[in-house]
Length: 290
Picture 1 (cartoon, rainbow, N blue to C red):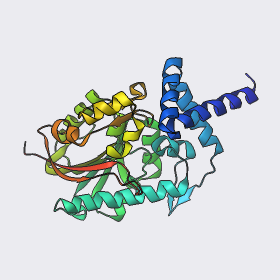
Picture 2 (cartoon, one colour):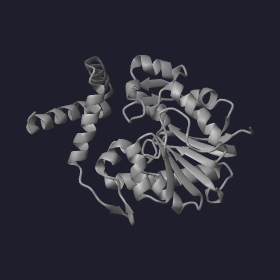
Picture 3 (tube, helix red, strand yellow):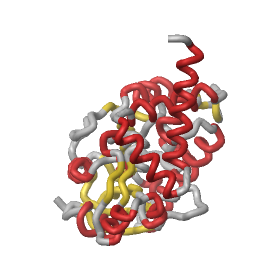
């Protein structure tokens, strides 16, 4: 197949994918329906990622630490922009520390912290600036785990499957955070992972995680919006589970009454900030006694 044809195909897919992610609600919904009916959803999205990575420049070092290649940055954040990758990671690490403080704890007193869904270390790379705790990471993508293991020795990282369990002992962590993880999982799998995280968090330890809340309701169709208003979680592109293209939307009452179950008690909530670094809702929950 000629290279020009391949590049043209990728560019065409990228254009369609951009419509899905960034267009006005009506055009976006039409694009979603077109993709799903065509049966080439995964191909379109992967082509879009490859196309964006090809267009991106790269930097090797950032503050003395290696920077992941463009393709990896796109996988975890949807963009290869270096400043965005570093700034957002640093600011989210600070938000995590603030959430811990709001729960009458101090992150610098913790002994073990887990970045669940660490990707290529967007947040994890900044945690040693905030705490002397031993830092761990886990992700289902073996390539990202391998890169962190080789290039960011500040953390101990392990690969997990899409489904539990994790490769860690029971009651091992004072803090587990999951940034933009539950936003990309189907409902059943979310509940299974909450149960698994309850296993590895110490009694009295904290779980901090983010969800797509009211801030993202304009991304839903009419029927989806009605379900959301009724307190039901909505998942788009469940066939792309685990990637940025699968999107889960959580009403507040669903998280507080159903997702956390009896293993965690809610200690804090920050609604998504439209103009802030973290536009997703942020939840802080405490592990109940075993």
